[in-house]
Image 1 (cartoon, rainbow, N blue to C red):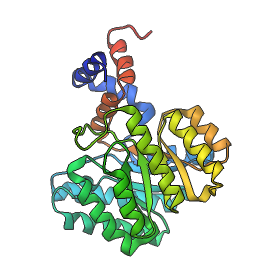
Image 2: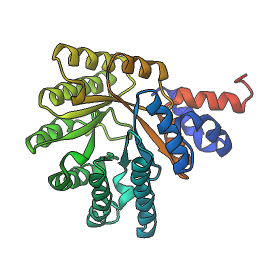
Image 3: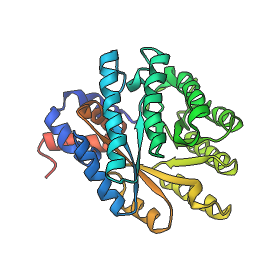
Image 4: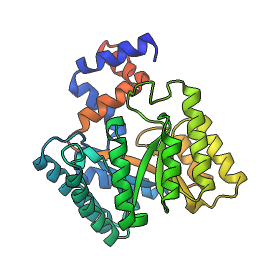
Length: 302
């Protein structure tokens, strides 16, 4: 990140909340479940799948965790009731992992029982490195009982990811979302060079697809998208064995092109009253987007 980009990221906490909300609207469905349902319906009408995410992470009380779990239960019921082509993504710390791993497992099993009853699916998102081992351990425990109804996320910028992937493959049926990774991690555990991150991503895509792993290829990077498209074509990978994934509000044209080419594609649809922490984190990750906010504040965005 350049010095200028770092300056922009540093300035984000000082940007008025109302302005952050205005510029974050394309990337968040809204504050309510009804908002999420509306956006998923719109995506489904375009032949696009969705994963719904109730915003919130690093929950530090059991009461708040149980509230978040009830909201996630409502999501699964709403998907079934509204016949949506969607599943659920959860943050492990949202479901109590930082409080007690057994508490997390209890909550995850409640959601997975519902998902399995509806023949649906729950994805365990990956957070920063203090939770990597615990998240993978919980996934291993849950997939023994829930099989194809549960999946996990791997991040290509972590140096350990290919080893983690091989371990998952050796353990049986696996469903992963592969992304680059968004958290700021120490260099000893994470690649910092963009080329290294891309190479790790490519290797993990190829290893997954050649090993029968169902993979969500989660990237907006044209270099990686083109590699994946070429690889599935060259190896004659069936469209039911993978999907592309993108964030809500990002690269609409590229998204529609992939769908028109016959690829399955899923959009991450976040919603909820915790939109502000999510929005500021996204702004920090994307200084160019933050620059538009700053220009608006200074009256330069006309």
